[in-house]
Image (cartoon, rainbow, N blue to C red; front, side, top):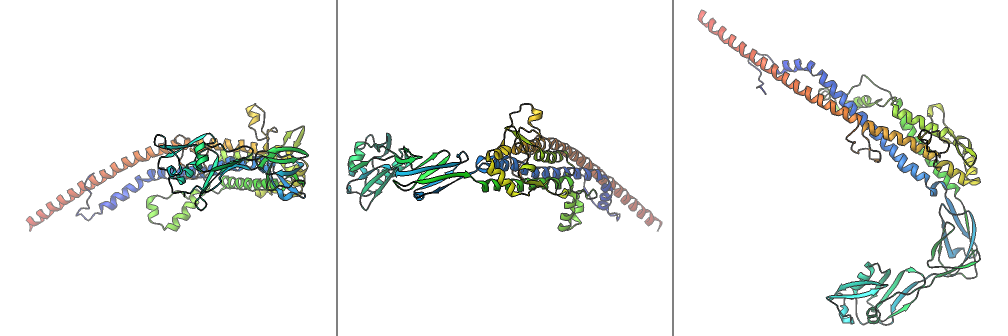
Length: 494
């Protein structure tokens, strides 16, 4: 780089060069503005894409779970109601059943009949255990448990608890007794090696199965918690001769709450998309150059860039198509079992005013509740039905009447996610609004080409600026020689 100096001629060479370069830098400023706008646009795509992924992969998925859209509830009544608690899963059969608890299931156990005269810090060898090749080995339920030759009683207890022998061990220093209790209830004993049983003076007590009468049928269970007809039943107390009645019904409140939540989340997404595609564009507000920012306050820059970023996705084709597909999916029928169902006709849901642009309103909750109580399976099928159509044009259409509403929306959103990934390099799976862009995308390539052009133009402008400085330096030198010659001639005439 040539030496840049301001000469003695009185000319401000830096200012002159800056003025000359100002016009030359306009094309570079425009390229940087294009790059900035493209980056802003891509960031907005990423933000929207994260919300689309969340709506599809999290929200729609959770709505589709049977426990959310086909929820059941179970209640217990009768003279033995306190003896059991119940929980219905989505496969529970509506109706009632009776249960009598004759006997609770118990776990097998082993307990020292007397104290062994040692504490947990005493070594096992003092209790009579004999090491074999530097280890003390015992067996519990067919599992070999090894500790070192100098291990204590406490070490053995810890080793048993850490093993997969299926028992819980406890040694009480106060009574100097060991207890072993099976983790699972049910008939059977704990199997112990002779040295463990003898050295700790263990007496075995077998476990028992639960004895219950379900709908008049005597039966046994190896656990106090078991499932009958989709109802998880937990026994708490023996109550022979007395009966509890379990009633299973559709959990209308939970299903209504699921549909309300879906409507709220759908409305939030459709509102965001509508705002983006209709956002006002301020064409006079372009990204600021570095020189422009130097002349502005931070608050002014913020307000300016807010205008400059507005409308970058206005009328975007991908988002506009998604909005249309989502609305069509909402309006279209679902057909199964020879009947036709429609969200806006059969379930008390309406669309808002024109200004609300497709938002949903649960206008008649009583109608929705009545539909759920009359045929909960049909309501679940309407929302979650999976199409069996193989023709891709029909299968993926938002009007596919063989596809449930949640699946139609999921397909529409996935199409948009894939298009955004191709266009902007956004992730198909991440909900992180700061996630890195994929390396290969249309916009990524545009940015790469812009960066090459910016780099090339910056290099050429630097060369041009250096030439100006060299030219002014030569001019400065000529002026100085002329001044010196004039002074010499003037001196001779004197």
